[in-house]
Length: 626
Image (cartoon, rainbow, N blue to C red; front, side, top):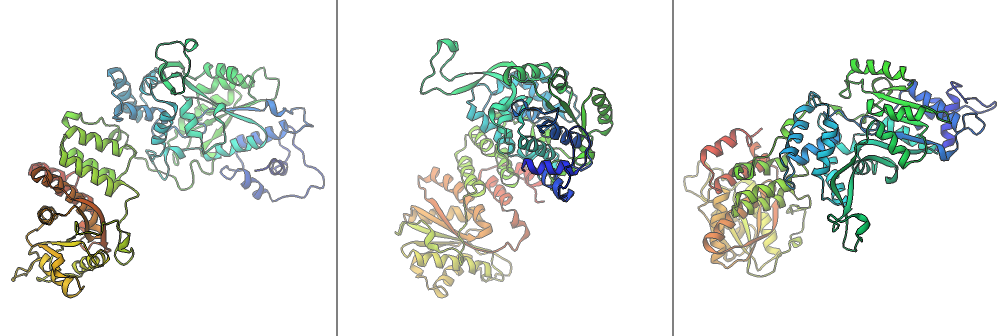
């Protein structure tokens, strides 16, 4: 966006207001093209936008009596409700603190902090906050984040920003900018205005939030502040302490200022040192900043108020907004209607859902002494099906509270195969088995899992698993193979076993030396496969294994093998490490198998010895098939 382009656009819109004129002989540029290039997300007739364009045209025209030198072109913006949304269902900063107090396992909140966290949670949906909530929030926020370095705090803020916004689809908290207002910021900057954010939110939250979306430097961001100190400073005054090479800067629990109302004016005067000529806000907390901008100013100045009157694309209140419109216009402010002036608010693909998960998400965790195996299993499944930034911490906390090595081993393997984005399956026919990092010696085994027989015969899926095993076995000729699976399926009068048929198929159809193939012909479930496999592996002095099964079964099988392996290790002192996978690539023929994580959780429950009644309850509720 170039200043010349903006000037052409304004000129073509007509001489409406101070300083506008059209030069004779100027070739017209299509009006729609000019407007779309600069204000694509605004309705062209928006009165406040046109007032702003007229203003900028006048104060940047060196021939105009309203001309303002670039050094004095200062524009200040509130953040929440002015540059970004605040109705989902409340301020981002409130959500952040509620989550920190009620859900973050890294802190131990005291009773005072818990009371504020619960109030933030319980009063958000109907906006029934007590009148002193802004100050209570500021005090407890200072305490909740005390001790964090600035980088650690920025990381925490980022953890929140990547989450999906409650009440919307298609947007994270980090993306909830009002796109029309982003265009206003860029427009002013392209016309040599220095843009500042002056927010009631924490200065360092604002810095992290704005970075990457708006080109506003850190030093142009003003907000609520807490006292900072050096990590080694302790109770020593800053004048008496020398910052060392090992020191870092950390937050303390001492609130310095809540940047609202007149405090905004004082901070602007102190930090900027120049009176703004433009002010943008949305609430009574911005009135002082507006009045400071437009009163006793040596330059032409203007103030703009957004009203949240859009209840279709956002959670505005049209009736309340209309009263605010009259109030703000009578105060001399330009009013921006989100409903009437914005073509879009957050983006055309963002959809208001009208439903919130606020109470469930911020429900307090079960105390550690009450964590059950069921808690861990449900958290494992949730982490896979509905990922959240705190999943790994929650799973680790569950496992630590349980003090159960088998459960902890299963959880670690689950994190690897279900939650690690870098974990991948190697597929027969697509991936060369030589990609497997396998020691080429006789201390390694390919473990081939069976599949239910039909009429006493192998299915195509079981043959596919065997073909994958043969490909891997030929690539690593010193490895043994262990086939596992008992006499399964209906109409199997001769009691053929999966493992026996697999061994014959590998020898007769795939050319694998039968001396390399060992069988478990008793197992009827994946858990039994695992236990019987470890007995064979111990007898053959195997140290590492690669599991071979169908692609949809791999993660499920690997988790169960690890859990059973830890149990067997505790009983016998023997263990074998799973170092890889090789799969027959196939879609599940049984719809239930598409939810392999829930099947894995069910079978883990049995392996871990959960009571049948508890397993049944989970199967009917949290782990039910949808």
